[in-house]
Length: 134
Image 1 (spheres, rainbow, N blue to C red):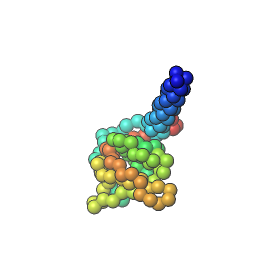
Image 2 (cartoon, helix red, strand yellow; image 1 turned 120 degrees about the horizontal axis):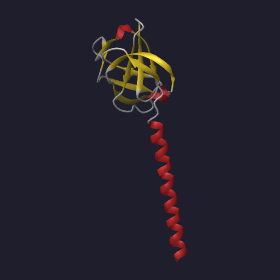
Image 3 (cartoon, rainbow, N blue to C red; image 1 turned 90 degrees about the horizontal axis):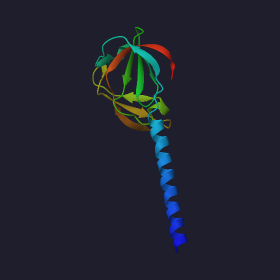
Image 4 (cartoon, rainbow, N blue to C red; image 1 turned 90 degrees about the vertical axis):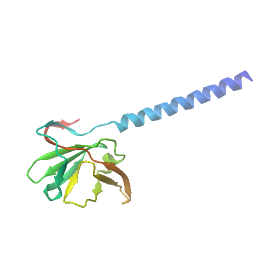
C-alpha cells in the first residue's frame, strides 16, 4: 500500500514538473523580442497616413515597424502581446479614415487565410535603426 502511494505521489510530482517546464518554455518564447535595436529620433505620434506607408515589417508578437515613403520609420510597440503575429508576420486592419492610429485594431492573418487574433496598436515612435537584430 505504501509503495502505491509513493508511486502515485512520484507520478503526480513528475506531471507537475513537466507542466511547469512547459509553461516556462511558453513564457520564455512569448517574451522574445526580435526587433532590431533602434534609437528614438522624435516624439511619438498617434496616427500615420495610410497613403504614406510604403511597407510594414513585423518583428515579433509585440513590434511592427512602419516604413514610410519619406524614409521615416515608425516603430509601433503593441501594449500587449499579439499571439502568432511574430510567426505569421501578416496583419490586416480596417479604418474609416485615411489614417492608422493608436488604439486601432489589427487582425493577424494566418497561413491558411483564416483571421487570427485582434490586437490594439500603441503609439507610433519615429526611430533610426542602430544595430543588427537581437
